[in-house]
Every structure is written in structure tokens, then in C-alpha cells.
Image (cartoon, rainbow, N blue to C red; front, top):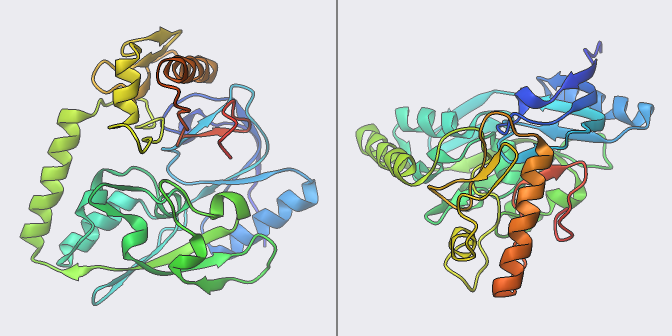
Length: 295
């Protein structure tokens, strides 16, 4: 199989923060076979391998990535009755919309979750009403140490809040199947519109990864802690704590990844000092995170 691997590709256009350096190697995977062979390429080159989808929950360092970045472009989607099967590169919001057109609901709350199906499973994405793990029946993965795809049940992932064991095992999610419920399309679209309007009202738009820190259990939210600590509107370089939502760290157009990282470290220190709470990022900082609790 001929692989189209590029060298020294800027990663700015492959993440919603629009920052970061270059990848030593970069390629697209449009099938499970290409995914497997690209992983083998990384092994032969003796470089790290990383898979990305929509880039909506990732921050690449200004130094870039010393290995192979694979952009997941696997986009097949199939609907049979109440079951929706999507390859891991399918845009999650697109899956919600197509499901609604086929009179399938139950996942309207995920319409505002950016990124791909695979990324959503990787981080157990969701809103208080619904998490991706709530509706998944099974998935097809390529095990980190295997060369053949296998089917696994949801409990394989050991889902937690914004977490799954895939973050540690580095298995590759190829596709997943979800059990939805029959509902009139007009009703589902109304729900999607309601969630979308709520997002416009509550969340800032722009170059951001959404909520940067996970919500700690003993307080209302990470945003509440950041605001109470006096960090709302704080800036470093082109990075700013959104005046609209304190857990949104924005790139106001000219930020470097180092600006965003330095700002979030400062927020972490201030919240720690005021509330004795260790905020944990849900955004993945690549290749090295300054937060000891993050993978």
C-alpha cells in the first residue's frame, strides 16, 4: 500500500486553537487499512504516533510534534433501524444531524460537542444530559499491540468523566455503533436548535478548545472557581480568559501555544492557592503537558 506521508507540516490548521509548530511526519488515513500501515510506518521510523480528528480538544506546542500525526478522515456512516454505525473520523455534530433526518433522537445534547466520533469516545465527551458512552453498544478497535481489528463492549473503555482507558492504552478506535431511539424529526430538530441557541448565549465563539479544565466535583464548576479566583479577563500575550465564560481560554488572533499554556498554568496556580483545588485540564497538551495529572 502506497502511503502519502508528508514532512514538516504545520499543525495550526488541524486544531481549533490555530496554534502550534510542525509535525515531523503527517498523513491522512481514510480506511482502517491505511491506519494500520501508518502506525507501522511510525514504528519503522522509530517515532511516536498520534491520531487526531477535529482537533477540538488538543493544544500543540510551539515546538511541534517529533513523530507522525495521522489525521483521521474515515467518514463512513450507516443507519439500520435504531442503530447508527459511524467510523471514527465522522464529525459528531454531523452524525447527530443525519440521525435526526432519519427520525432518530436521544443524542441532541451532543450537537454542540465539536470534533470527531473517535475523539468523543476517547474523552467520553458529553453534556450533563448525555454522554457518548450512554448510547454506544460496541466499537471496533485496532489494539495498540495487535494487527487485527477486534470488537469490544463499552465496559472495555472504562469510561469516566472526560476519560477512557484509551488515553493510556493507545488503542485506535476504528468505528462505533450507537443505539438511538425513534422520534419525529421535527421534535429532534427542535431539541438541536434549543441546544444550539443555549450554546450561543452561554459560550464564546472563536479560536478555542471550549472548556479547558475539568469540573471538580466539590464545586459548581471550573469556570466558577476561575471567576471567583479573579482570573476572568486575564491575558498573557494573545491568550485570554474569556469575559463570557471563565473556563474558555481564547486565542484572540495572535497567540502562541506558549501564551495559552502559561496562562492556564497561572490560572491553575491561583485557583490552587485560593481554593486548594488542583484543576485538571481536559484539553490534551502535546507533546508535553505542564500539568502532572494529565496523560
